[in-house]
Amino acid sequence: MAEEEKKEEEAPKEKKSSNMLMIIIIVVLVLIIAIGGVLAFILMGSDDEEDATAAPQVKEKKVVKQRKSSSSGMMDNSRQLSDIGTLYPLDTFTVNLKSDAGRRYLKVTLSLELEGEELSLELDAKTAVLRDRIIRILSSKTLEEISSKKGKSKVENQIMDTLNSMISDGRIKGIYFTEFVIQ
Image 1: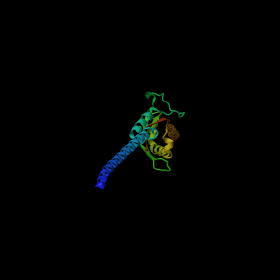
Image 2: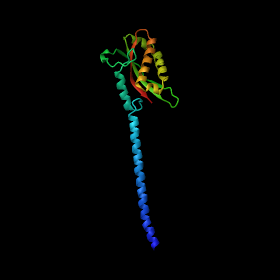
Image 3: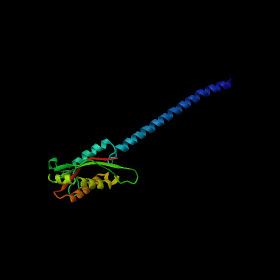
Image 4: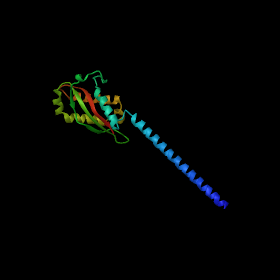
């Protein structure tokens, strides 16, 4: 009879310890998930360089629209909207970025600021060649080269120099990115 009483006392202790163990496991799992969520939020939110989500895309559009490249290659924020010349919008470019590891895509829409309206006729005639040159420039870049502000400015100047060397009726004064998405 004494043995039966011991077994009955051990059974509730085993239930209590197994319940306590389950509670501890659940609490630890919840903490791990919460910490993982916070870390993911911090890492995704603080990466201003790469545009992988919709919010940074909108931010990028606003910043780039307000800036303009001058002939020296520096950003000139002092220009007013009334100082901007005729804009010549180009269709969207989607290119593969140069990469060793995985596949990265760049989707860019841009507008060219023209020195005179007569230049738009020449650009209309040379649209295929202009698109080809821009695609070649963009696809030769790596993620690291275009993900910073300095890199975007460098690409902007390279495109502007290349296009200006191809035209004769005027010149392109600036390039404005209206969409710049990296995936």
